[in-house]
Length: 332
Image (cartoon, rainbow, N blue to C red; front, side, top):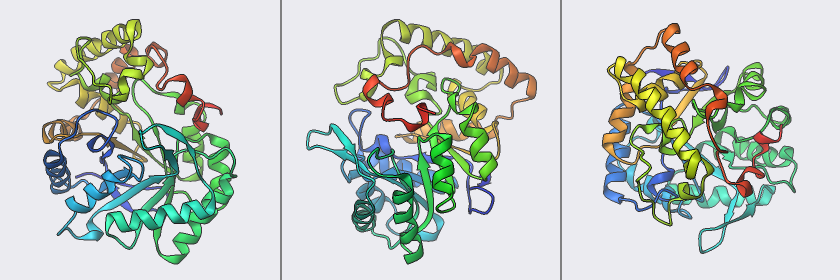
């Protein structure tokens, strides 16, 4: 497994991480046994980063990881946890809580569900508009001092918020969507984190399945699959975006690779400070994603890919309107 460093002075982690969200929530029916088998396969392949959130299945994902990690050495795994999202019993999102007391309470429950006495990286899932980021990060910093957290991260925040947070405590990574179809961070956010020595963990590298090469217009989604509500998966937008995928497929076939492998390899090529998160829910998809590590794209090939899918080519926003307004990263 290739390894990459988190920030200027952070730990070494695997060049690919496993995003575990879909094993509990958001993408329709789940399979507990296959999820655990996929986590085991990822660890056996050398992946060290497991990314979760306390609101993924309202604690289900953390309990799943607890079960999957039984018998494994704790020090061999880098567990990253997002917190702060508030949900009602029907699963709907009802806000974010970044108050210091809420930070510490959420952490206490997470430690218990995961069955561990520390979290490798703790990060607010979104910014609480009613709480200064300095207060939220300050509370996590106290937990670092107390030994409950090793590193602090941020998620979906803009350049100004990154600077304010980093002034309180060193930030190890920024987790944010980054793919061939989502390149908004390149203008201001990516230069800022590089100036401050902060790594990037890129989620959505396959644009929630659009860039997997396995999506089709005829695919039927369940009501529990939130992609059915995303602009990029709807109507004419979907037609346009799938045409981009087919253009990428032609390039992938020239490389004897899959569309997903080319899309992941492109993100890997953007810098040694970027760690793509793979949202594989099955071992077959994990195996395919791992193949991207063996795909070494030349400068000419990268230029061909970017010409085929230029930043402005994607149709539709990455979230619906109600969720877009919650993204600090989209306001700066």
